Image (tube, helix red, strand yellow):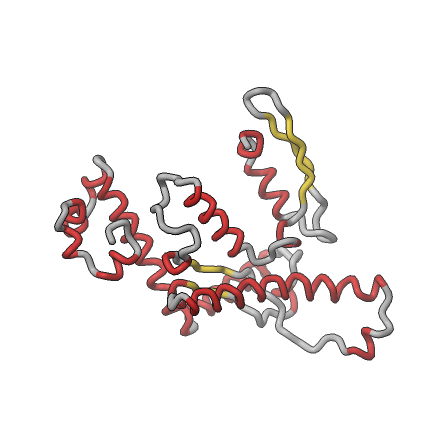
Length: 238
């Protein structure tokens, strides 16, 4: 475990960007304090988890099970207490590129590109579909938000065009997304974590100095009465 933590950020970034056929696989080594060396040969994790939301939730669950003091001791599978925002990196506009008559004639090489498209897009969509159903089943659908632009075309949908013009155009796509109605749903995801941090700081013997009085009162046995319900539901004080 220590050897994993000793990895350089540069090695991690190069590895997670090593998309097959676009960039080469990356090799590096780490060494723990005892001198034990561990070797890594890595490619883009999107091959296994193009939408890593479930993995992120799994990591949080793991920390709760380990009773990490940074996490409130809720039940590990109590997803109704999670607040999840999933940001996609955009995908190409869905088009009917293929049909069964053409596919029947494909060999190994003919299937290569279509399979990559299917696997990457399908895996991301299935994670989104699964989490939407889970949060709806827990009556907590407002706790999960997926933001994804799925109508990119031309250079915008390419993985390897890093010109200044294309990067500027991608920024415009992001600005356009912020103007869509879904952007209104982002507000709780910005407000609640900030308020939660204030409440966590209020528990610290040193954290009260910059905490608003109504939140500092939460430290008293009766202070929680003045905390709005939506804060109590997402805080340590419920």
